[in-house]
Image 1 (cartoon, one colour):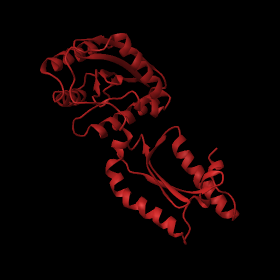
Image 2: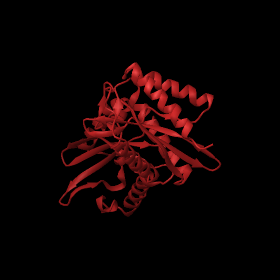
Image 3: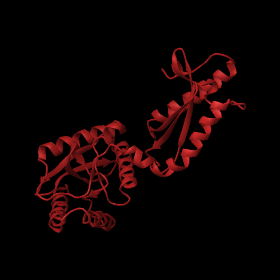
Image 4: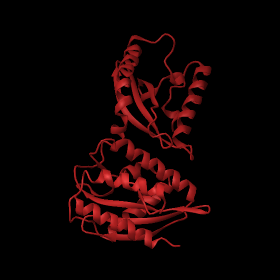
Length: 281
């Protein structure tokens, strides 16, 4: 299907090189151990030519910038990728204008692409007291989340996430998504829900993820939004009782103090403690 979008007429050597570059781009988005998501940044037309720009978002390097441009020519059959997948050494005026358009915007995209990835996700200014979701609905959402992480289904994962409006929330969210995919690749499906609790403000679901001889115990926060229930995945709490994990949990709780009441934080501390008690010894 990708080759069907290419102009393969003309010089066979150019067509062959273009097929190789197209196959490389396809592999980057399908490589099972380090899949990328092509995030559209912009499209521009100039005469019969067009350019589409994408950030190839890597789950292993969630802060890395990898912006790629693809040039098209309009034909009687619609838009086709230009021969060779690259501009020639003697581009037309229209192609030069497209290249300049992409170059001018790339500088801004480097700082904004994370927001573009998450532009459709609900944002929370505050967590309202007394609005904890039902346990069965929360467990169902976490079940879908775990299925998506183990299936490398990044699009579905993004659709289950909410963000707070705290500074740095976008990169934290993308890092957490990358970590979830990495954990799923290590546990090879050996995970189970071992804890859930509905309080007044929070509903939490605790999971055991077994990788080799060790296990991790993420505790997911499920919050109501205008778009339905979502995971506050940047609040990456864990039940693991280690000094390092305690410090990281405290950092998360410190951030959550900026969007929730003191009573809600006390409630959440109790849930973390009860999750730890539920972990098999």
